[in-house]
Image (cartoon, rainbow, N blue to C red; front, side, top):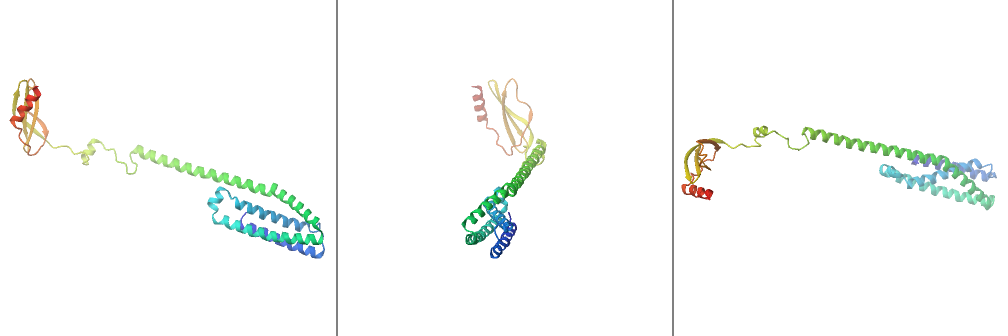
Length: 253
């Protein structure tokens, strides 16, 4: 129940109460004022129901209601206090004019009216509230589910195409060579300069461009190739003969 509805209920209750007071002043009995009493009791019941709803707004009411729920609760509380004052005045009027039994009858009538409104109006309001919350939950689940499916679809497609944000592209070896990711060593043609033999082993010493020197070991039955492609090693040192012979002796052991 919103603040506007509460204001209307207070207005109905106040008009009915004024009519009841006028009826008492004119000496009318309760039966003649039953219509005004019913309107006052119905408005009183609606305000009590508004206070209960404000205290228990539900999940969506708490999340999206914000300050409106607090405003409704305060207005319902103020309206309830005003009707309590009217009830007290009504009790005094009845006790003075019709005796205490009349007020007891009034309470019984009010109980019946509250029960009727609970089984009809308030029950329908609660049903509409539950249906609304159910639809809202379903909509929220569909939105979140759809968003998650969209994310999964986007990431799946991006991964399949190798286009995930900030992910390195899977280049071919040739592409990596072209873009400089892989740097191939500079090659040159090394030619046989000299060879040393120890028992059945051979040390082959080669020289290439930019004073590149390389040494390879092989079996005497295979021999040293006349030339081969080797990596450029600028200004490398010429292998020492003593070191070469020592290496051959170590290999032959």
